[in-house]
Image (cartoon, rainbow, N blue to C red; front, side, top):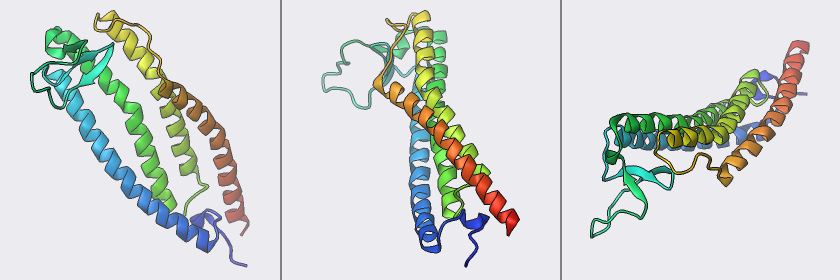
Length: 200
């Protein structure tokens, strides 16, 4: 019988090869999404920081960005250009937007790490466990951070509402909690693989 050791995470050869192929594919996709998201995030933050009022501002208590203006140059109803705020307010908005974007980037970086491990036939390892736990915490942060940023925008007189809860925040919180439960499964699997490797 072929020993299924730590290198293949206990998977059969066929299943391990399929997982490795998918891992490489998803790794490439996640890297592309990460690069696109990071570039978009940097552009949005810079638009706020440099007060580009034609393309960045606030709308209904949240951040708003306009790619192309209407033919008559009219802005959407309720849109307040970032250039109409004081310098410290636009700097605060840029900082808060950065804070809002960090959890999403952490989630993507964690997925990239997981897919890299899967491409190497590593499934139940301590590294997998740590990455899944990191993603779970990032999902919780994705749900909580907007509550903090909305409160800060309200205190800075940049938003008419102090609390704004969206359905995606609840979804992220639930998924984060479920991932914490899944972490225990990964941890048990990692312990089994370590014991098996030591036994053989």
